Each structure stands twice: as structure tokens, then as C-alpha cells.
Length: 423
Image (cartoon, rainbow, N blue to C red; front, side, top):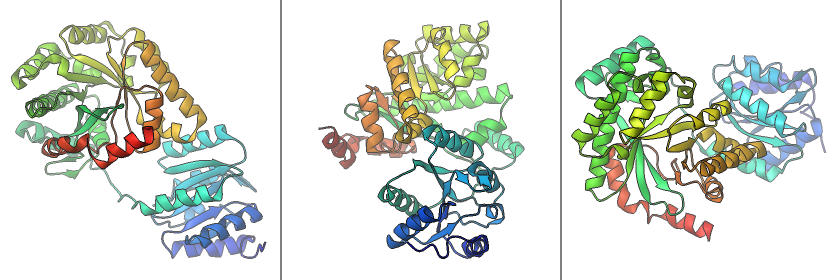
């Protein structure tokens, strides 16, 4: 096997310069010349433009394109993969990453977690030796997905002003992601979500909206009540159209501990013509850490009034599960990051299965978020998860679009495919 063009440091620098001048390349960074050559030749034979590198010191100065993908060995001569990952955080457009190592799954998982927390995108982690056909399929799938455009969040003050205006004028955009039963994909409700834009401001990530109003209890309460009002009307709309189902909203603990919150939410559901049990208030795990008398009293009052309480994002902080014994919740929602971990990591699958088992033992309804493919569905069905939501079913949609798609939801091609896969 020829090693020419894959070894020298100077050659690597020239090749990295070539990366700057091209787009959509697969960059293989590994100091094992044999493996680097093998990967490069295999991927090139399958139509991928490939550049092989042995030295990662030039990574930080590289002008990557959004479509570039880096296959990164975590152990390199003179440096390790964490140094390369750190260098990538300083680049304008870091590539998407496939991690490889011979040091086992725990190293891969920790490296992936560190990279993602630094804002990098990790497509997968592969243990050596790995199947080149599997790598090629992964890269082909990743290259078929158009990279996201760069999003620069507006200033927090601009977000607050736009949100204030939208609430004053009752123009806050809310969309709905359907939730279905895992066993047959029949509609059982939807989650009301911020649409991702604000009038007069344009695209704004829901996370940036939440961050911009952090600590402003009055604005958080206004936002929650407005979303509850729209959600209740949406629930009435699909109920009158013949579709039985609940509606869920994200409910920060700061909103639920406001004075007269029970009276306010009862007025919301009464005005919309639905029952309290049709509105599910989703508590984030962050809310668990407020175990004050006021917080627990509010949650108990809401539960007694008939509202259902769901614990959202379960799995982000495992220590929060200890609070399950103290909260009057009726269901748990397994965080979507766990399903992503379960696709690749055995530990992730183990945690996912344990949470589903815990939910059943506590007689709680279990909702799985982030279901994107047939393997995800097979996992939740194998673990007797009750309800699912995610892109496999539908993205979030404006209410008219959701109502229009409901008649075909249970009979579309996706549902038939799922039934065949389960048979």
C-alpha cells in the first residue's frame, strides 16, 4: 500500500491549504499512515473528495466550509484529539466531526460530550477497528444534509422588546408538534412550542428567547400565560374537528409559583372550552431544584385543580430523578439527547432503558422526544414507552397545518413502514 502523500508534515500543511480552497471535503486526521491511506482510498473510491492529514497543529488556522467533515483520531503524535477539538472552537466555521479511537467507548463518549458542549457538531464515534462501509454510509448521509445557515442571535434587549410587543399585540407565533401513541401512531395531542421567530425581529431561537428573559419573572409569567391561551384554543380546535388529545406547554417554575396561577390557568381553559386535564404543564428538570414550600404548594394546587404535570428533559441531570418522589407529576418526557446517545453508545442505551423502566415502576406515562428514525421507534417500543414525538412523526407546525395533516397521520406511508418493521 503506498504511503506517498500521507506522511510528511510539510505535505500536510500544503494539503490543509488545499482544504481552504475547496468545499465539501472529507478530512481524515490520523497519524497512522496505513489506516489514513486505507480510509482515504476507500472513501475516494466511493466518490468522496478526501484529504489525509497527520498533523493537527494547523487546524485552528483553517477556513473550513460548513459542508466539510473531519474524521478525527483521538490519539495523535505530539498531541491528542482534545487539542484538535479546542483548536476547532476558534475557527469561524468548524467542520462536522466523526471521532475515532482504539481506547474504547467511554473515551469516545466523553470526547463527544466535550465537543458538543463547546458548540461543535459530532456526527458519530467509531471504535477501531471499524467497518469502512459503515463509515462511508455515515458520511454519505451527512453530506446529503445541507448544512445549516449561520444564525447570529439578536441582542437580548431587542428580543425582550420584540417579545413584549408580541404579547401586547397578541401576535406571539406558536406552533405545534404532534404526540402519538408508540404502538399505533394514533394522535393523542401536541406540544405547543415557540415558532422560532418574533414579529419585527425575524428568526430567534426559542433558547435565545428564554435566555433573554431569564430572571424577569413578570415577563416569564406573561409568556407562559399567552402560550397557555393559544394552546388551549388549539386543543379545542382539534377536539371539535374530531381528534381527541391533550396539549402540552413548557411551564417554568417561575411562572407556576406566581400568585393566583391556578385561578389564571383555570380561567384560560374555561375560556377555551376544555377541561384542566387536557392541559399538561411540562416542568423542566431545572425546576426540580426549587424544592421550596412555595414551589411544591403551587404544583400540588395545580394537580388538585386537575392539570397534569409532566417532568420534561428527564435524563439531562440524573440527580434530579431523586425529586420524583416529591413531585405530583403524571408523566415523564425522556430528553432527546438520550435517544441520540442510545443510537451509538451502550451506556446511553442502558440509561434510556433504565428511565423507561423507572417510569413504568412509578406508574407514570412515558413520552419519548426526538424520535427521528425507525431504529429510534424500535427502541421505544422495545421499552414500552407510551407516547412519542419527533421528526419521524412531524416537525412542529402552525395549527392549520397540523389540523390538515391529522386525517392522514395514521394511514400514511411512514405508518405502514413502521407496522411492517414491527411485524
